[in-house]
Image 1 (cartoon, rainbow, N blue to C red):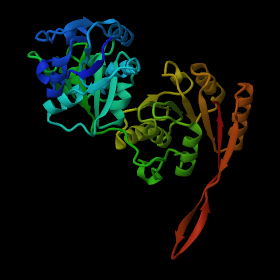
Image 2 (cartoon, rainbow, N blue to C red):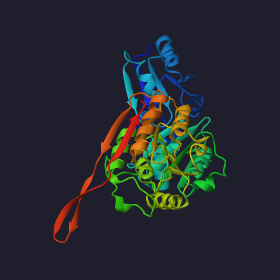
Image 3 (tube, helix red, strand yellow):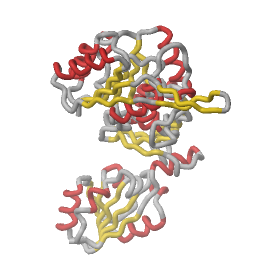
Image 4 (spheres, rainbow, N blue to C red):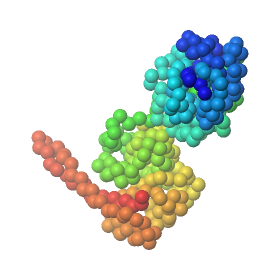
Length: 400
């Protein structure tokens, strides 16, 4: 069994990117373990070389070998989506020294002459990852791709989500003689082909952001018309009842001017909001407000519910601002799409309130709660201020 183990970050794979500390450690190693790509780059080392990747296999080799000093070599940096993470738990009783390397993130950003302290990092290499959600919610996103997720596939998804103008740089075979770094818009690079193992830096200057932790848009910030709009205080209550997460998929049925859709899209910045509306004037206002707040994760669905709901992505939350008398059918569609969906209905008449409660009872919905919101605001009358009450609104929330 070995007495000393170096866990070494090899940088991009080209030996020229090795740090001096890593070179010194490799010179001491009698045994070197790593992937075939990494091992094959160390032709000048006299150490015995073994191609292993799984942490358990590496541990077994270290415990059974005759060598005293060994090195486990990892591509990139030992702390950046590295196999070193899973290896550490197998080396508790070894004398281990970790030597970091140059990561693909720092290497690509250096090539692009851009800082990386403000970059959001995700990996789609062998794992599920909402890359589009990350891009739409961050100004700069670095992506490790591989396997079924390709750079051109991500660019195609960005185009489909309305992010075709974002600037993308794709790096292949970094540090080698045939290194290639391609730059362009997502729309341009969606037509290219890249190595399955690539890295990307995506810059989205119109990322979805919310500067405050709570909804805070004032009513006068929206493009307004003659279409009814869910007002600020009611809007905040509805969003609270919807219990949105950053990755939520939301249906806003009867979206009107889109005030709830806009705030929901700013909250679910890595998710998707579908604003369903049939009225022509409302659709025009919806488009104007989507553009005003630069919301790539807000999708406008033209049509009348429940027919317009067919085929939409499964919702986590559904807000119903207008139902045109089809509330039962709308709720049925939502529950068929996701039996665990969270629902909030806004009612301004007692008849709609009664209808909503009847639907909840008939559909055996759980955790039904009714909240009445009555807002009274000050208005100026000459040099005086009077309090003017708005009609009360009922929020009926239900579901998990």
